[in-house]
Image 1 (cartoon, rainbow, N blue to C red):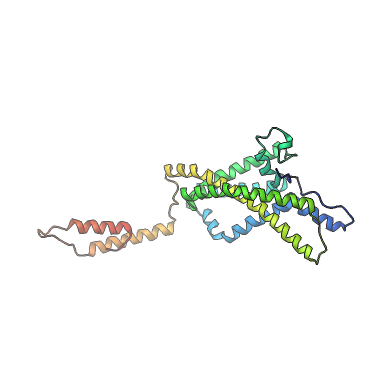
Image 2: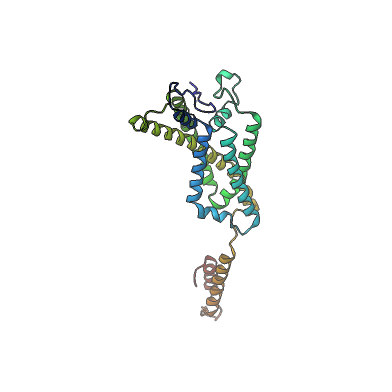
Length: 282
């Protein structure tokens, strides 16, 4: 049985005499705007939590990578705002699953979003993934990490999607606000939080799964172009140059080991060379 709770907002609120403010709260909690606010708040919390790591992306020694970081975060921000204000987060995944359905009765989404709105969403998603993928490969992880992320994303999609459908369906059929100071209000809040958390987790899991999938070929291209490893900044380059100079100075001052005929021992010279390449002291 296919769950059909892909409405623009969660409907099915019980009728009856209620204060206008209560009815407005019920309608707002079922809108796409509420889901979008929670999603944007979650993304902001993640960025603030890892703000020092994120700042590294915008301080890359190469201007092209700094520009790429601005485009990546700008397109992702635009995608989050567009999906919240113009598109519909609940319908987005359902419509993607309805591509091969020929009959309306078999579709998860009875009233799809207009094609021009969905086209803008697809463009923003593509730009976000294609610009985030190089940053992911350069600063986060390589092939194994990306492959694991893609597998985990597509594996978690199935249980999260059906859980989301179940929660939205139940919420649409029984949702109403009980008295403020009551056990029913506490249970309702827990249910709404669970529904929102599942919706946001589903969107994040799908995005990360797609990001891991897109990052795999992007990483291959970066490796072929030798652009995957960040270049050291000025302070790091000066530090390593000073270490190399110290190694050369200590090597020249060290006594030379000789063999029986008075020549330098080549094995000792090779060991000193290997130690210098590894960064160790002779």
